[in-house]
View 1 (spheres, rainbow, N blue to C red):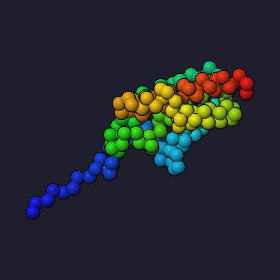
View 2: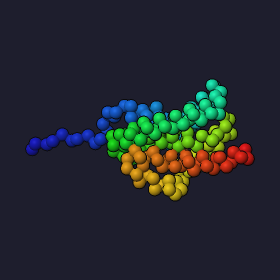
View 3: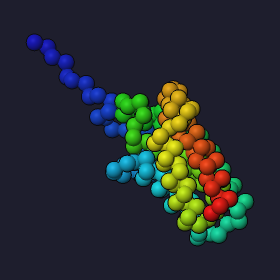
View 4: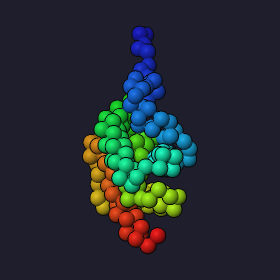
Length: 170
């Protein structure tokens, strides 16, 4: 009997696009357990806080750095999420957290550089990311990396709106 060797499923192969895995997992933050999405959000807040608290930029410089970081996370994150989803054989792998990073940074756009605003932004983003109000859940239906990333962008916009209203009182 001539048996063919079993093919290794894609999800068991070594990643071929290391840059994509590095970006998609946000330098390994997505490998944290439990709750890799929360680890990605916390990593984004900590990076923002380190920049804000160590370098003391003006509010305009902080916003510009955030906008540049958001743009970079989207430009690199959408193709990286697509590649990693394909290579892992999963539609929306939990360890892909560049989407949480982008959404968290969007939420931080209106925040002052202090721990209260950072914590509020973290809680609000995670709330909207987990509950996925309309049209956040619908955005997941977009193809590949677009659906993986854009639902978190929308959750970030929701959280930014609520945070902006709450910043009036706190």
